[in-house]
Image (cartoon, rainbow, N blue to C red; front, side, top):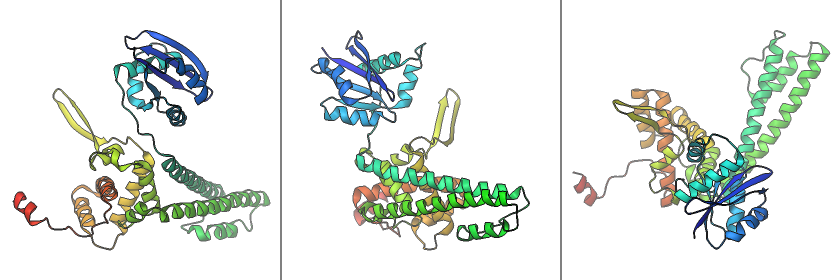
Amino acid sequence: MSVYAGLDVSLKHTSVCIVEKEGAVLLERKVLSDPKAVAEALRPFAKNLRQVGIEACATGTWLQRELVQLGFEAVIIETMHAHASLATMRNKTDRNDALGIAHLMRLGWFKVVHVKSAHAQRLRAILGCRKLIVRKLIDTENEIRGTLRGFGLTTGNVSRGVFAAKVGELIAEEHPLLQEVVVRLLSIRGMLREQRAKFDQMVAKAVRQDDVCRRFMAIPGVGPIAALAFRAGVDDPHRFKRSRTVGAHFGMTPRKFQSGEVDYDGRISRCGDRMVRQALYDAAGSMLRRSRRHCALLAWGLRLVKRRGIQKATVAMSRKLAVIMHRMWLDGSEFRWKKEPLPASLAAVVV
């Protein structure tokens, strides 16, 4: 008799539910969110246990990896699919969620989520922490500007290298209380700049040690951040059967809505990893606005700018970058600056 398990994971406790093939509930229990405690609850049914379903969450990936090492066939299921099914239940509880996940596993109405490798998660941790530092640095500088503006003091358009000196000049003759406040903010800003530089060094070191990232950076506009973000977001290039599906995976293709007589394409879906999508968008914008070396990809993007505008062209270019980078990763090839002519055999077929 085949049985299936569903786990609803939280920080402290995990609700475990096991059902048989016909839907009868065999076990409902709440245990600690620890792999050994969960494995102890599942072990009496291990002989007939087919799959253990865990909804994608912050701690679900770690729990799934540990359960697999303990010998259980645990998978992470897609959150949107699970939510659509669990929303049909009248009462929202951890017990009901575990029961619903167990039924999804029994019926096969789920989509397995790719669990990134530990290396990819470490790379993403570097990028995520660096992004936090950059965001707080911008917030601190804006707070300094806003504080000074209330006293009629403006820094103007200055670079970050001379920002602190300019602020020091503005507050030199102001009230001591204002000076103390701004000096403390400048101290915080200096610490954030120092830590951002260290994170930049970590990113540069990770890129130097990765041959794939170095090949990505041969593409105009693609820097260390974009290369590393794409490397960590894809993790395993073989999980995509076709390169053109990578753009859709990261939410850079239009939504489709068709019902009866209504049929239209909306804006991009913006699903998937936001960090990768933003990095590719920045790389595409850099290529279209700053690149000086001619290549076939840039020429295609500039033609699109004339027809559709810079914003839509940047989105299209970012999707194309995802396709090209994935194909370079799979083939082990270098970026092609010019279009290569088709072989004679293929050219004859095209004609």
